[in-house]
Length: 171
Image (cartoon, rainbow, N blue to C red; front, side):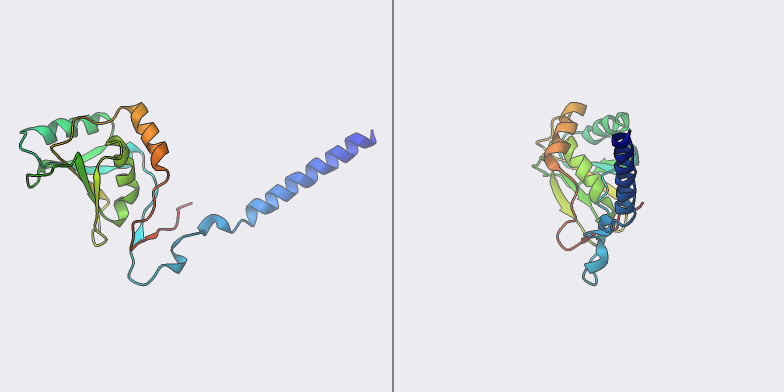
């Protein structure tokens, strides 16, 4: 009988200890913008779901209709395609992702759809959360769901680009 009382008391103490540790945790804001230099933008490093990502799909190749076709692929994957059009020709890469501080997490997800073969073009002065996807001559197709998941695992978590600070995480 004593053993049950002791085990019960230890269990109650463990629950209290865990509750106090969770309530007093001060690491929730660790690495956030408290020590950000003046003038540096706050980068949204939250990894977004497809439905929350806004993109413009632009064709940087000589192939007519490429942007419209890829925009349809993105729509089928639940992305918010805002604009479809042309970019200056001569993009040799698979793709170029152009974004600002509010699009860091979205661009990170999009990198996985290009198996981390897309060039990134971060503009700290850009104020919207839309990512421009400029398709290049080396583009063939978007990654499958399995490939995207594997690529996201390889990429890890989004990080703030040089010259920016991670924005505080919303709770």
